[in-house]
Image (cartoon, rainbow, N blue to C red; front, side):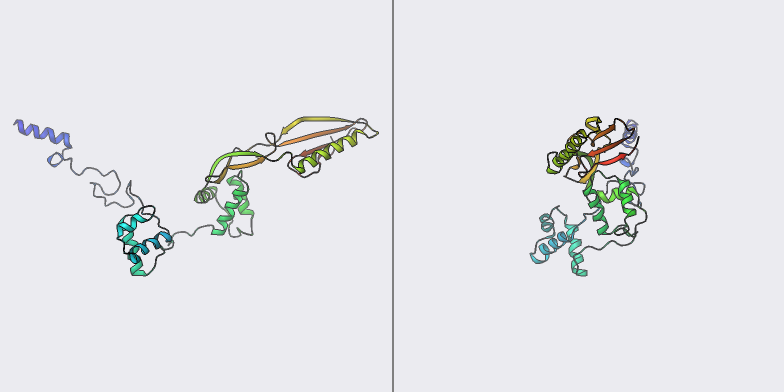
Length: 277
């Protein structure tokens, strides 16, 4: 009697199966219940086979067919290392179908962008690292030369293409351009000449300067995109933000003024903003 109770107790601790081994149980990896793995779909933890390039396939065929290496030795000669079953599949395809290249994509929806259009999207990002997905979307829809067959595209599709091209979101690195270049020196010279000219006129003018150190009018974007391993940069003036020097010239007798803006980032010309106050 004691032996029967001991066996029952062991069976309960072991899961209640035959011989205390726990029975078939439930398969947590997906598929058919009972651990048989007959269910549809990819089981949890299962991995796809290696995506072999045509160069690797040609190397495997050369090692096995021309040099007489075994399947295991040929799999260890390439990077990443392949098992002999994968090498056997490549050799079998070569001997039966007389081809090395892998089969092209079959079935399903064709890709939205061609290879040339994807390169153009990458060039847009490389030209402006601070460009957003919405700006990319607008540029693509409005570009009827290269993207003439694209009428709408989602930002998630653009993000997926950039990820495929190894372009990731990263922090923008602001690089100041050369403030002492010849163009900037000429701008300063013209600015001083204009002020001296107005100061020497018969009718006196009164100059009002607003923030001589640079007035920041721009909302800076702190995140950008670029290829993995390269910084996402944006060119800014020598000081922080978008610096613009304002000059308000007031005549002492006429109640009118002209507000002139001279950004460092534009050509050597004064741009009138308000003609009259």
